[in-house]
Amino acid sequence: MDRAKRLRELLAQPGPILSPGVYDCVSAKVAERAGFQAAAISGAALTASVLGYPDVGLQTMPEVLAQARTIARCVEIPITVDADTGYGNALNVMRATREFEAAGLAGM
Image (cartoon, rainbow, N blue to C red; front, side):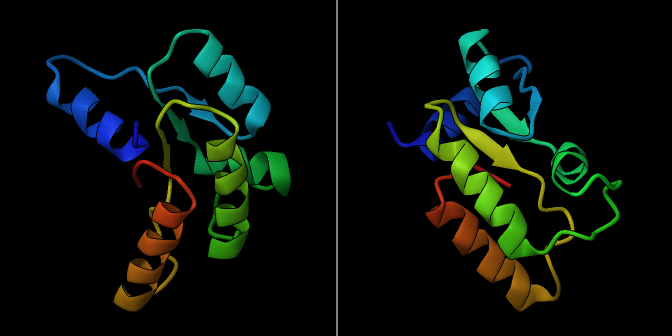
């Protein structure tokens, strides 16, 4: 099933969705095997694990996209990604949305 569609189905159900923060394939696989129905790529955890710095906007969209694509590819559950900065102006947000969608992410 399309992961974005699965995420929409989860959102339509009553109650919260428990979606742990992940930052690599191992943490995503642990979340999936633990029975979580979705996971969220944590921008802070991703930046800390890749760069060793706090999440202060240092990672570029292509850097986050590459990690997000790899994470989404290694599990079957829907994955959302922290893209809170939008990586620039409205055109950058549009590009980021299309790129993350093409990479297999279920939401941003």
